[in-house]
Length: 160
Image (tube, rainbow, N blue to C red; front, side, top):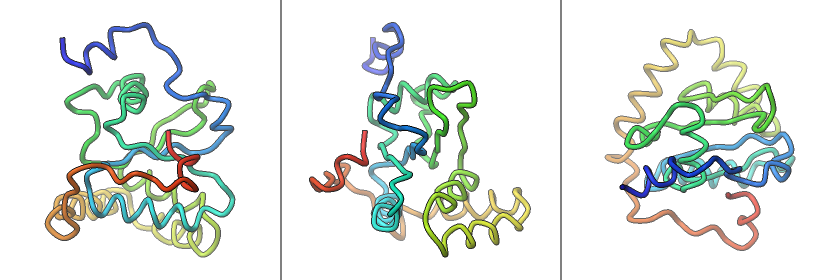
């Protein structure tokens, strides 16, 4: 039995203390992607209202949350950003690719919500096409990290 199968066969337990999320968005990202890590660092610096939490999509707790939404290894979203909102409530939902990026931008202070509003004017099929193009080239231009960078002590509270 693989580690992922073992995780999924255990009875469900909260992947993260849900009370600590308190309505924040949970951003699941590719921890080995240079572009993804730079984007997370940018969001950490800009998230003055403390509305975002982060986890690499390879983290066992992230794998469990993805499984609850029907995404199981090996398809555990390695090629996309996933945003979970309203975790632990009846309104819980999952956003992927360009919609996830827009949700992150809306959570940040200005001018990022304005940028999200402008990007939202682009029809979703075109946004998705652009997202997929960037995703397919991200390792070539931004590199692949051997491991997930370790957050600084000040950043740790923003990660699972």
